[in-house]
Image 1 (tube, rainbow, N blue to C red):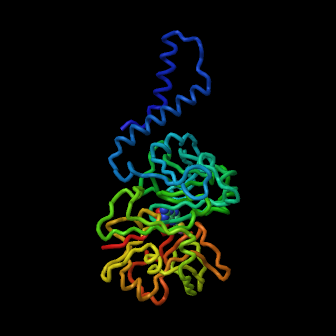
Image 2 (cartoon, rainbow, N blue to C red):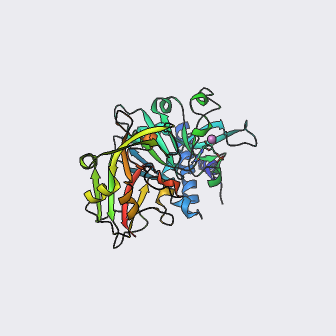
Length: 356
Ligand SMILES: Nc1nc2c(c(=O)[nH]1)N[C@H]1C(S)=C(S)[C@@H](COP(=O)(O)O)O[C@H]1N2
Ligand SMILES: [Mo]
């Protein structure tokens, strides 16, 4: 597989110019433009030949409080066209040789913010990974430091086991001071979502008792109802006060969660759950959308233990921000018998599908 025809293409262009007796030297800008074209072309060819279907279909979803059209999906190909920045840094997960400095090629997050626009008063960006890992970074820091979504390390695609295809990296070598704010754990592997601020609160409810199209989650469905924040606020409100099972970013010990019962949300969408049926919950992270391994809520459970969708938290009922997996999370009141599926403390809940 051709690693790169960037340099050869530029050299070839120069030779052509010399041979045909052109007198004008290409400007540095012209050379730079050719270099970028060559890189993009190279990547396009490699992507088309990509044997790994998952990687070929990988997208970065950009959503939340942007000022331009959103949500937006950038394919690896589109990202590659933007990935013209090189950041030289060590990689804390290169444990064999922690001091080794790599050339990471990628898209600075600040460029994505410029492209999609940041709504006023938004201060954070949250990244979500394929495995539902989550990190939140201050926009002020994104503006100051070239944090980037890296696609290549030393001219090699970053493999899945090394955190690719999209790896959120921090320029530790050039700006050692950022390590104090963003430790190793902020280097996020397999990034799939970039949320500016927090998304608007809503819940999709799909009636899949007959059928639901599989696969394309972006396809519009005529059996889907959207419950808005207003609708959810008008449903009976419930509060629990207990330790929560979310993976990252919540206080230890008892936390108040406020929200609505799953059963009331289904009723509000006009969906009747069959007595032996179930609702599947879908969260943002791809592992929570795997149809081979769905997160099932059985009808009996939904009814008997008041399974809950949380919209607010704390004594002062704050909305749940993206840095805590909000605006909507699934909560298991203590009255719900624990099952072995600990994924059910689900962040970024987007949809309930009824049927099965
Ligand atoms: N996508 C993703 N990125 C992640 C994590 C994760 O669980 N998922 N864990 C972080 C933390 S806390 C550490 S210590 C390392 C874990 O890297 P390892 O799985 O290679 O040990 O990745 C960081 N980036
Ligand atoms: Mo860690």
